[in-house]
Image (cartoon, rainbow, N blue to C red):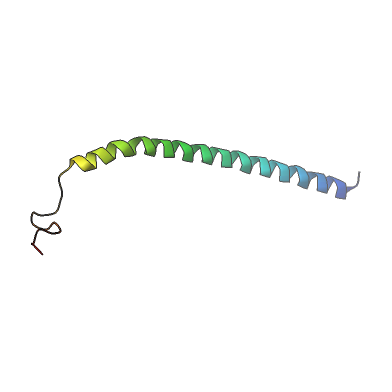
Length: 69
């Protein structure tokens, strides 16, 4: 075998390994994002009910329409 053939084979193998490594990393990142989205979706409904249960933070008399005009 000539050195050129060996060089091409090494580059092909390295390219395949790089592709496999990146694909695995992408799958890991997607799984982490999916878990974070699920966690956020579970916490949103409970935080929405807490927000509606809290009184308004605006001082009295600043609501729209309270000045009579």
